[in-house]
Image 1 (cartoon, helix red, strand yellow):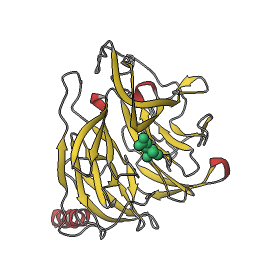
Image 2: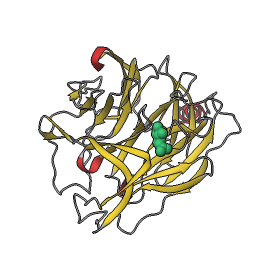
Image 3: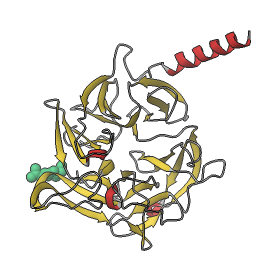
Length: 351
Ligand SMILES: *[C@@H]1O[C@H](CO)[C@@H](O)[C@H](O)[C@H]1NC(C)=O
């Protein structure tokens, strides 16, 4: 009796989990666009992350952090190319309103501002740890023109490792700073900041402040901030706490953004966390939540409740709307890059 009851409950939970959201046609399917190659110098399989779209073209940029590359999916030709390598072991990325690509360059805990259409010949950027991963080389290399807009330190101490970043309408940037040990760092590096929290870089990109003094989950544990996204009007910021050993429970919080970027009125908006997140223009959030089945959890922004689930063959780490009309959802998941057509558009349309 008891086991039948449980089986029935599990089946119900499974069918609910597999329910596509109303924003995706019931016949639509996730398509694999590319499988990233494993490069000889890497210590791990490819791990795709950081998907974001160029508002001017709808092209999608993402990273394979393990191979130290930023990749570009050109929507006009459906082609994948290497946009930047080396790329500071970039992780989360976003576009700012000037059309610059902003990247969490995790190798030295920095934020970079990268041009999509100007290149420059520079001495090959030498890796921090030449014994692991990208070994570096001599001579010059032509790379997209970039500048370091945040030098990797707060209060004179190294940050944990900027993970995901969001550009606000006022040109300020918020980023999450958890501490996940990386093989391309110096061996034995320890956390120098006493908290893993959220930071803000001022609109002139000169002043770095802690946007939150700490990042505690509802049960009072130190959370690990991960995915971050703002509403199009810049008035609400969403920050996900990623679930994992020693990282507290998975939850996502909403904050009001006030004068000078002060965050207030924290509330638990969703009862699960996420890696990267994106929004559509019909009031839904697309979250890479660590749930039992791999895929995208779609949540009503008004209620924080789940409205559907998009199964993906590998566990997604990030999502972005892109394409010429910005109605295709692009998904980075482990070694793969995927897409699915939707009936909506991305929320953050610029043109
Ligand atoms: C480069 O891209 C930026 C941002 O989209 C744009 O404002 C600028 O006009 C472009 N420059 C060239 C030379 O195409």
